[in-house]
Length: 317
Picture 1 (cartoon, rainbow, N blue to C red):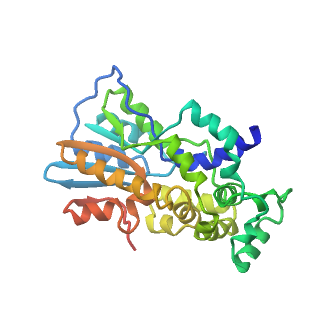
Picture 2 (cartoon, one colour):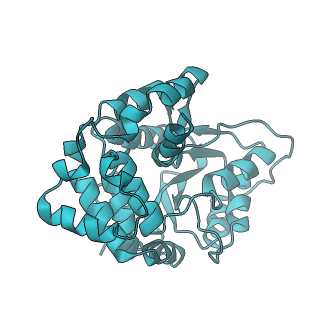
């Protein structure tokens, strides 16, 4: 059981990267601030920040990289100060897992982590792509990877070979802590039930993961420097470079973002939440994945199409 639950951790992390704590009240009283002061504070952090303004409404959109790798030179304090002086804060989707969900993972998790009996990953990939995977995995001590589901294998490629790290500083947590201390109201843009996540993963067709595997193999071929290049593009606010990065591309083509059931729901939660927040006066600070903000047809393109004046890093080539 322990082996199954351990193998599931990187899979569940794919969704939990987008999760955020709900607002809890605190005692500190925020100082009055103008939208301009909040924007200036946020931009001093070094994170990519966009400001969308229309009809007296201001959205400070933080393009998050979750988690920020340890040792990356950036200053979270100004962003925390901006969050503490906003009128409201929006956080990514939160995931809700029950005790029953945990036991279900323990006893039936193999259906998520492993391919059907008698099958290997070679049964689902074209020969040229399989040959590239063989080269990437040549140094593995065991060949158990051949029997792992594409969901698990993709996360292994991105973690072990492309350098995707867990456990660094979370932007959403830093912002949420600051907002909570200042008693700034905030909310998650939606909730995904653990049962729905598990049902979705158990129903996955391995053959549908060819694009995910191709992108993950490309990221692994780029080596562990891929994660460092991605983080540097984010830190320097080079958004086109971030979107072109093989690791970031792979994350967008794998579960949950590329899942036909969960992916559109995550994006729709964001557009609906922004519409609601921007109907209220004052300044909204939102922590959204940088790619979701800047990708073609993403949040920034949608805001621009709706007549918002946007200032911040260039997000289009």
